[in-house]
Image (cartoon, rainbow, N blue to C red):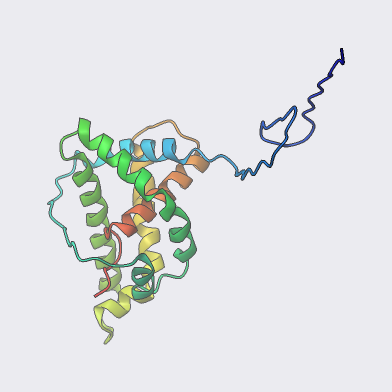
Length: 195
């Protein structure tokens, strides 16, 4: 009898993959684990608490199709261009969390998105008010200030999450809010839809 000895070693950073004996090819792609889905859930719940208390008219439903890159270009987004593209991969996760929230809170999803849209309209109005003496078209003023407008809305979302008293680390909160803000951009609650 031949005795086979097996030695398994785990030296180094391999994210938990170990093989004793392999007779074939193993292809593995590893990425840093990011817990964005749970962050998004907390952001949605926090916004739900704040937005449910606000009287927001519902009904900003423009169903014209558009491509996200076209919206980025149409609004001249520079600072957030790559951030939006990065977090667009989480669009369906944001959608699922909003739908789950909506299942237990009547019209919760519509209220949250309506609230974000209301904040956008107020911040856009502030920018237009500051530029009221300008001879430029409204859309040109929005384009010149698109990244600032996103910052303004993102800051309102951050304040709402902080005021909801959900326990979250600031770094996690910022990442979850960045993802949710990009979702709102994709859902046309922030900035203008290409015409």
